[in-house]
Image 1 (tube, helix red, strand yellow):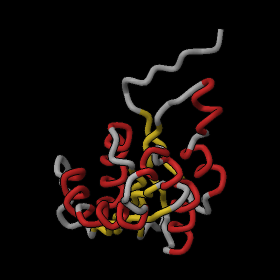
Image 2 (cartoon, rainbow, N blue to C red):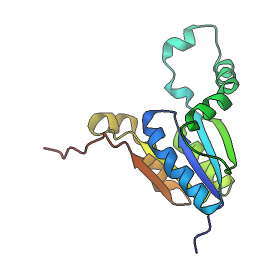
Image 3 (tube, rainbow, N blue to C red):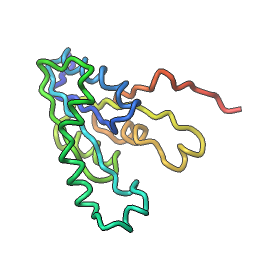
Length: 155
């Protein structure tokens, strides 16, 4: 029998993440597992113009943390999470590294995440967080693509 005590939902609060949420919630319900929801603030993705302002990355991250619980509630508001212990986590760093690290350090049994479906140059330049998590995670990873993303084979 599969043991599943902790399910991790990795999110960037995008539409792609929203399609993965029902899967993570359902798995948590079916197995009586905790639902850990992680958002990774990637300061490498900040526009260089940000640094010309008087705001520090630390102050910016602090501001994000202030509204984080409310953002998590809003993100999950369309889903029935009654009876599920939800553990919201915000981390700072490279998304795939922080997701894998959190999962390993906290005994996560399943990572669930949406995919952006990037291809070609965009995929080459940005890489795929989901792909890196799949390759390096210690536990199974369930990826969910947005239903509107259509595979277009290379010509």
